[in-house]
Image (cartoon, rainbow, N blue to C red; front, side):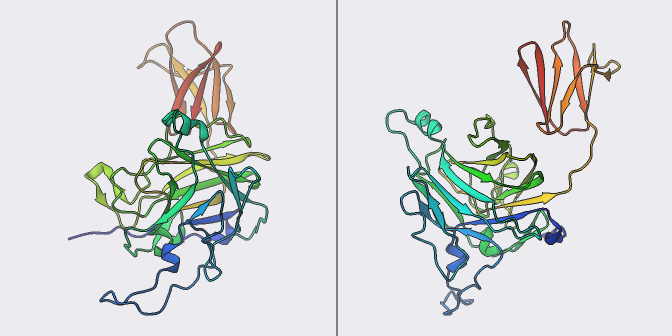
Length: 330
């Protein structure tokens, strides 16, 4: 017997402070519907009206696969042929008309992977090896099967490379960023990085930050999860900042979609406390500087062994910066 948990509630997306829904891959949107015996019916899915669909594309021909009878959108390559930019539709009541997605290669990483013949990115290619036909709800947003069940992968799909995505002109505020891959046969899983930065994106995290967002649960023996495993990261964006996502290539699978949804930030009090012993009494640290926008706490490096805890956060990492300790938190 299989017991399914209740589906997550659908949110009133019209109340979101910005809502950008991206469907990577056009195949399921345009695939002819078949009957129970697998015979073509001559009918096709209704064109999506509330998703931005990005089909197979290349830097040299970004719109070769854009179809007028689907929701696929037109991209513009830069003069150097190293970036493609798409203008995105905001499906919230804010209807911000200025938000764009620009995709580019992580060329430095490609050169590290193979210094002699760097596998530079040429574009992305659509694929749809599994068709589970399950609708899902991710972060309160209904995700149709035709969005979830196909994806784009980097061309070439050399393991260790990345597709960089830069989102510009999002209104300042707090956003949930949800990524997903519907493929239920991706034995490697799928991982990515989400961060906020300037236009150059040089503060990319060293390690993945999403966890596995593929349609297979690697933790329990590779069990397929037809309703998917979306991963949501919450970020704060200030005026003039950009949202960045690195889609990490591993020579298997890709990214099916992304939802960027403006949310009301949860008010929490972040406090740094310390003790001379791990089991001792912890007290608030005087002189600690908390930057809630950058999600960092800076404190002078102690002269003696000191144990720290951060109240009001879910995870931390620590680095040394000159005479200070810098604690990044989520």
